[in-house]
Image (cartoon, rainbow, N blue to C red):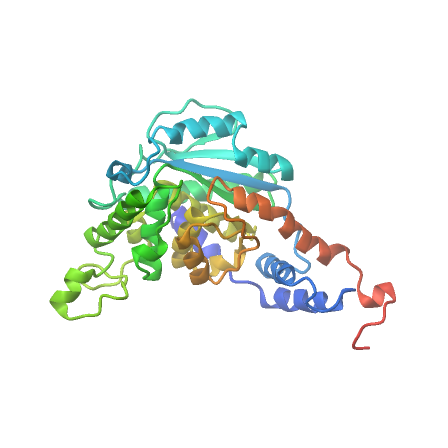
Length: 377
């Protein structure tokens, strides 16, 4: 078996006994039942993922920022030059990015992973070089990656997850860097959810109306060129309803998650999907960041549906596709602050909430142990 196959085979769904035990424990704590709202479900979720109640405290945390470039940048979907990707990698390594500040706040380590930056990077502390290619091909003209590249990127992400857990991390946080990667994210979300490009394509780094219109059309063209959606032209020919895009190839057959990633994904998307799979296989929780992670999580879930049981949605970003991805995954975001930065910033901000939810399970007294009369007694 390949590393990818072994990892997928190792992923287990949430443990029913641990889920039941965690829910019962929540009911016995000295607080009104349900008083902690969503935090109670977070603690229960982590218990099911770890197969033990109470679950282990999800600390220390480790952030992995996967960096790669995109051939679709040539289509003018962003005003930012492509060299910003490599420049921001340098900024992460120097400790000067927002993600570094947020990571320092919670005591998380930061690892930058080059899976597809369009330049050779100098080895440095905190940098893992797992380059699969010097960026992707232009997804609006054909497949962004080969099948071999997708698997290599997935397995690079798995390797990073394993390494961080081996180093002591008990919670993993996803991060990304790649100029033009919100375009690939929108295409992935369309392909996995069947939604129209206009509904899931956002302004990314803050593009103007003209660029947003171009970006939506590029996403539609990418889906059409790669045979991932029936557009209006195809519908007119076969009499079908074009209102709801459907995930099909040109021949009408089902398309696999690997094929979708190869067609319209980025190297960092595939690596993040592998990172999520690798964590789930080790029963270590993953806090998901924004729209790039959301689209990668759709791919991970398509490869191994039970992976979702090991994920917590850190936040919901301002990108419209992120809400669509989270709804499709059935995940409720912990915070909504209109973030659209990426880098793992939303996941880092959510980590203290996840820790607090679990700490309650370990440290809050029960009605019996505290000698407090229960409402139902």
